[in-house]
Length: 173
Image (cartoon, rainbow, N blue to C red; front, top):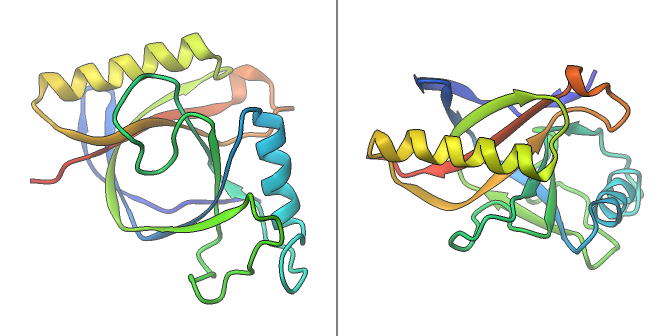
């Protein structure tokens, strides 16, 4: 079974869930094609790293949205990230051999999340992101960074069974 990034639910506003995520390590690639970015990350966890260590796949896969926003905190348009298993720390995670793969430590943060099923096409993601931001704005909750997409299933999972989420980091206080 695929490990899922841990979080604690800290609240709910309408259909938006507020989650506290602990510190995470991300393997991130910037590029133009989802397939190319995915394959670079997949090769990294498959052993294209110092030590030739196979790293278990985790969920979600995080990609940036294409909405014009401020600079992203987790991932921006044209980036994809794999959340690395919790067993790794910044000092124990295998170093990538591909210079396009960057390892980043993301501090603990609170994310507002809207879950949806189906395929995560551009229009569906845009509509859900606009809804997420609207709910937060109505409640006076500030955000930081750009919204992002989290996908939990393989491309071979039928659309109606897929779990997707749009999220954005919110300001505490």
